[in-house]
Length: 232
Image 1: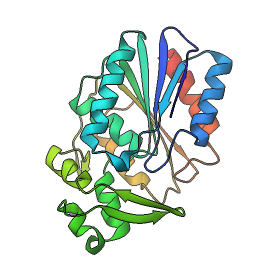
Image 2: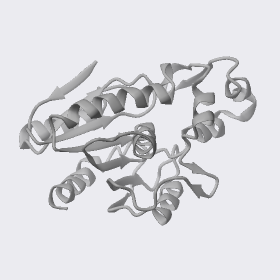
Image 3: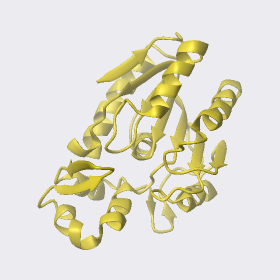
């Protein structure tokens, strides 16, 4: 499933949703409605099914799409929510990112593998980390199965952006970075974004009094970021 709304001939907002979700989330609904009304950006989002693919496979697909869209659009904003932010950052680190001029990161994960291990415990994930079996767990009443080579792919390719106190990302990235993160986030600690921002030059870091989903503040916070994107 994907959405592609052609609202603007020059600018595209490419949205990567979070882990174990899809294109029917509230953030995508809000952005589609806004851009349809304002014409500020064309909009693209697709179901990524992260748990069914390795990070390398996802990056292959995103890179190919970005390459194609770069032939049509002069400016691409790559927006990643949670694990989508992890994918967006790794595209900038390792791949050809075409006409991506800006990253918008929403409560971004910089260490998805470490967060999974922390949430589920090392005992539950040890065979999965070795690539011996899939990982199965329940999140928000949904049963999730992550393929068995997901973790090994991350470890072998070095996709974790933050490792301990190390931030493995260009200090002065080629794309401008804008981040929105909730102070009450219990899934991806805002302290990891603070660490990222101390080591990497970002255009804007918006702290909001909100949870991981940015349930209460997203429309207002993203409006401010969009206004700055259009004027920077």
